[in-house]
Image: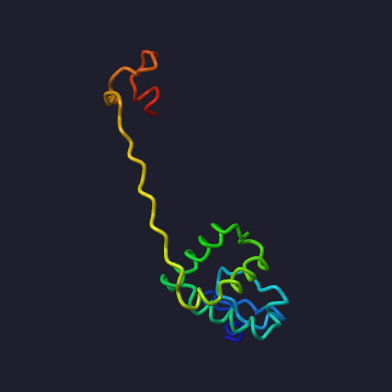
Length: 137
């Protein structure tokens, strides 16, 4: 049975090799870090903190609130330098937790003006078909 050890185990999962120079293991589904962030020790600490908290619903809610305030003030969220400048400008308020979630606007109420059309009634467009075969499809 010398051939048996040569066969690979089909049930064994092979882990991909970590990217060289990345310096930090990324969670599944996250893109690789740019080299300027991957090699900066301060940013490694910040990214590590983020990756430890990124599934916490309270943390994600706080990020959404901050992003909403940034958008309201006209900050382009895709521009990292603009986001960092806004965070530096509002650092004290962020640390105090002064940003609160804004109240949601109530939904629009729809009021029907005409009678409700049944699916087996003639279509109101005048085609002569039943509503379910014409505009109800």
